[in-house]
Image (cartoon, rainbow, N blue to C red; front, side, top):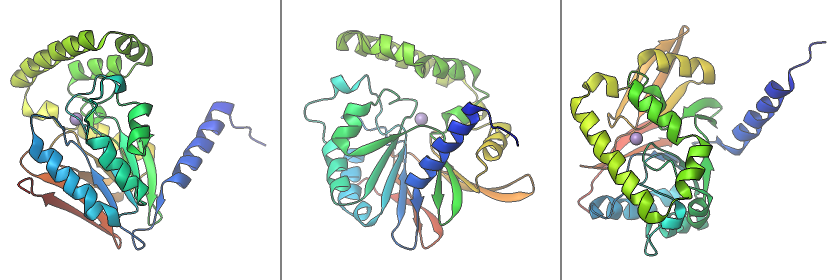
Length: 269
Ligand SMILES: [Mn+2]
C-alpha cells in the first residue's frame, strides 16, 4: 500500500472541495466572465456599463466570475469610499441568485474579505480550476503568465506576500495613497520603455499552466488582448480565452449551451 504524503493528500481534498463548489451546467443557465474593468471615478462610462450589465444580462446567469482588476487601484477595504456603488450593485446581483466570484488582479490585489462580504461575493485564490459541463477550466488573472517581464514578477512576489500586505495595510490611508501614487508613476515609466512582447503571456508559461492544472481551457485577462486561441498541449487540443478590458468597450465571455462566446459591451450606454 502506498501512503500519500499528508500535504499532497490535504491539497487533493482542498481541490476536490473547490471543484465541487464550482461545478456548472451551461445548459441550465449561462456562466459569465469579466476582467480588467479598471473602475475609477475618472471613467464613469465603465461604471455605468457595469451597472447596466449587472442589472441586466448578469441576472440570468448562474455565476459571474470577475477575474481581477475590477478596480484601477485598491489600497485596502478600510479606504473604500462611503459612496462606492460597486459593492451594492454586486450584492444586488448576488441577492437575486447569481453567485459572484472575485479574483485579485495586479491593481486590486488588496481587495479583502470586508469588500467581498459587502459585495456578496466569494474571493477566489488563483489559479483555480472549475468545472463547466464536466470539463476542467482554469481561471487566473493572467499577470503570472507574463514571465518575460522579470521586473514585474519581482514586484508581484513582493506585493502578494502576506507579510508585505500586512505592513502596507498598517500604514495610514494617506501614506498608502502616496506609496501607490509613486508606484504607479514608476510603472508608467517602465511601460513606456518595455517591448510589447514582454508584456504578453510567455508561451512556455502557458503550456506549463495547462499541464499543471490539467485543463481543457484557460480563461484569463490582464493583457487586454481579447482573443480565443487554440493550441495543442501534450497532443490534446486546448483553448486559451483572453478577456478584454473595459476602456473603449467592455468585454464579456458567456458560456451557454456549451458554447463559449466573447462579446463586446458598448460603454456609451
Ligand atoms: Mn491586470
